[in-house]
Amino acid sequence: MRLAVKTWIAVVAAALLLFVLGFLLTSSIFELLLPQENGVSIIDDPGFSGSYVFAFIFAAIPLCAAIVWSSGHVLGLRKRLLSVVIISVAVLLALVIRHWMIAGLFRKYAALQSSMEGLQASMPYSELRFGTWALGGLIIGSIIAFLTLNRRRQLS
Image 1 (cartoon, helix red, strand yellow):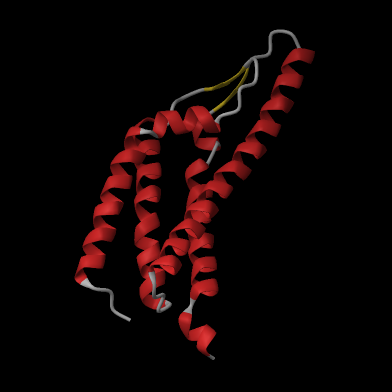
Image 2: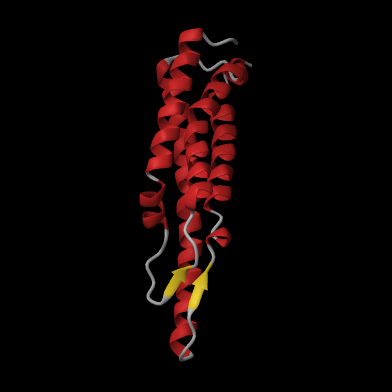
């Protein structure tokens, strides 16, 4: 099914808006995602590369939803909004799971640091892999939205 030109314009506008918001809010997002453990530090910050990764992932949410709409023949505003919600929740869930994993690792580092004097625990940003987990959530959310809202499958 082909989407109307107005729909594609709205999707691209939403993607551009989310790209800008993702780029501008990356530092706030990282403050929320990084666990606060005493004595464990991140060696470097995400910088522009991390900002672009999150911006592209946020911008891809409406684009992936539009692909689900066209390939799965998703009709109706409710189902289209539900597909966006499913994809967004999957990305958020992937980031929360990664946060929990890193928090556990930070607790281990803090415990090790408290048992050994003079040890400074640190972790490079590249090892956090939030972008990879967010991309995985985007892909899984798109697949779930397609499988649950696919009109062809429901008609059979």
